[in-house]
Image: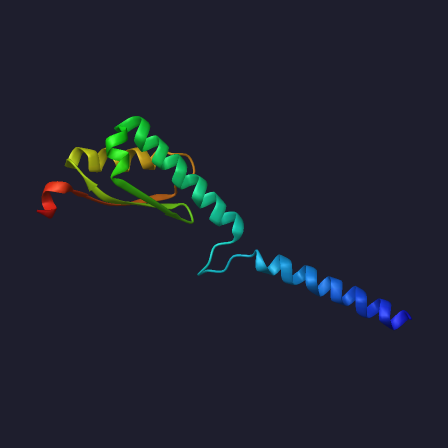
Amino acid sequence: MRTSKLVLICLFAAAAAIQVAGCASTPEHRSTGQFIDDGALTTRVKTAIASEAGAGAALNVNVTTYRGTVQLSGFVDSEQTVQRAGDIARHVEGVRSVKNDLTVASARR
């Protein structure tokens, strides 16, 4: 009886340890919390660009976030819009760095 209780306790402890380890991050992967934080940061950056640079600019700007680093990509109408979107993203709380890969639309012709 005592041995079966000990085995049962060990099984519950092992199951709890596996669940906690499943939520931990590794250098290559984000934890669940980091994934959610990055998603929220992406939304805040996209909203800031839409409200400050205009909805038209925001529609053409793709925002991706990984561990606080924001990447902007897509096509915009001018070099000023490229710079403005980057500046807006840098000033959003929680952004660690910005990789601005926006391209002026006339450059792709």
